[in-house]
Image 1 (cartoon, helix red, strand yellow):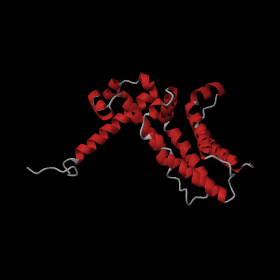
Image 2 (cartoon, helix red, strand yellow):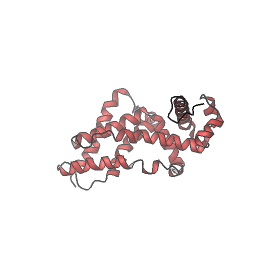
Image 3 (cartoon, helix red, strand yellow):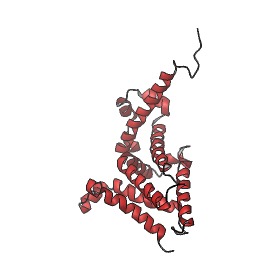
Image 4 (tube, one colour):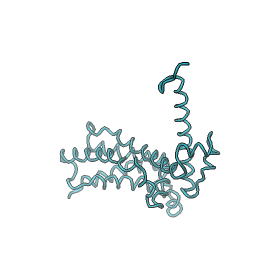
Length: 219
């Protein structure tokens, strides 16, 4: 009998099935953790909502905490990958900043589960993120890209010299996270839905204006 190699066509469907199963588990788990928190989510319920079993979830992820950490890793990997798509080297620095803010704005609006997971992990003092081997250095490429944008803006005499890229990242994240995370309480208090489609372009432009105003303010 011929021996199958790891790359043979006969084994490819098995690999694809494993990847599909793992992806399906993560998608359901992300929703469960976002809706119910780490403590409230149940592996039994996650298994029941997928085409797999609790035993298989433990096989892939090692347990509930491993599954939660994997959901966090996937969520953060998504936004970090998008941030690196900004054409740092060729765009005008001002346009690069606007693209970066718009990208973050769009992502956070369309991924409310990501915002909820971040909020939940803050409740746990980021102890699960601290245990991830992936998340520790995941932000470095995005910060490097932002640093290069700022350097090009300074070299062109457009941006001030005393700006820290982490401060800029914090400013962008603060606006975009607040808009999604506090949608309901803000609406209850101020009678304004920050995710109202009629206000979308107003807020999308506003965050770009705010960041550029900071970057171009006199020192």
